[in-house]
Image (cartoon, rainbow, N blue to C red):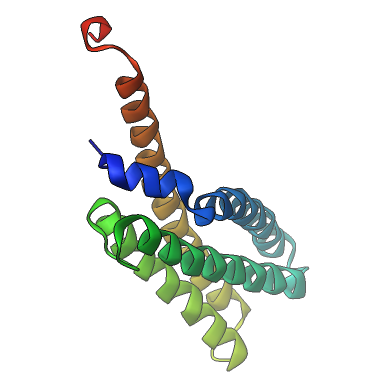
Length: 157
């Protein structure tokens, strides 16, 4: 059982559940467009400004989903981070945040030339993909759990 009945009730009642459901696909769309712009830069040498802008936008959407996600976690589990159900996802999220923030610092302070800077962004994106996979897996498990609860016990396999 992923959620206790009380956690499920709080999850379903929290306005932050909807916010997370809206922000997650927006963040993925920004990520996908940004990835295309980064690849374009590596293939053509053009579009560095657009690639950097897209990475900044991706990072801002990441911050938004992390802040609202921690508020959601507080609503549902009583802790802003590292609640039992999302402990490992939150641990890995810290790596995602660290790499995205390192990119912003390197960009803002002009610490790296374009290629290493975009490679840092790609490292941040790789961690994001893994972290997104963790959350999608958890969402799938929660849906399966809900389906199992909807099936009468005598009909369950």
